[in-house]
Length: 213
Image 1: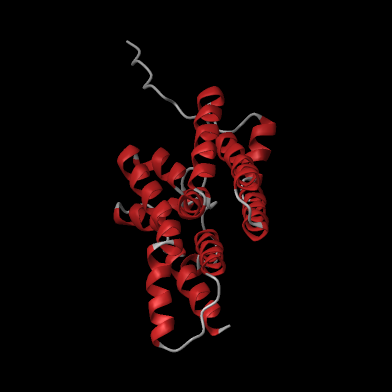
Image 2: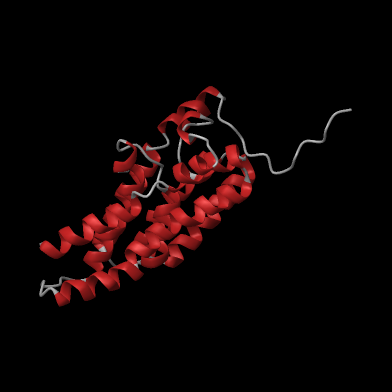
């Protein structure tokens, strides 16, 4: 039990680093007060531009990947050195992934308000189920291309990822955890869904508008 507690706390703290907030703060912008108010990559992209948005996207994804992959190996070594009995590796990685996503979504550094967990979840599943991530990414790109709504693309990916995990992985625990994270991701988009129904959701502009003379 001590080992699981240690992993959960460490992964939560890793996931809780509010990348989008810190990047915007470095530019003297409180990302929580502009645009959608979200600290994730999409809002950073809209407010601060493409380089900042891409940086936040990659950094948030790495939080999930490192929690499940590289950091877990380090934790295993530390726990073994401390004489803590180790359980199954999948159990530790699943717990680390969930904790990292929760850390991102409910960061202790911002009064437990954070992002929506899409990029961090993707990083987690690059480590746990890379094929499912590729399919979810394809769904995300297709939905974005057809609708130009990032929220629709993210919700589509949140549905595709657990579906593919159930189809490609023989693990009840992984399937249940992925389904729960997918439901959480969709729930975090409830305000986007409300705006979609009202027709006020912002679309991504793929090309700059030509200046009028």
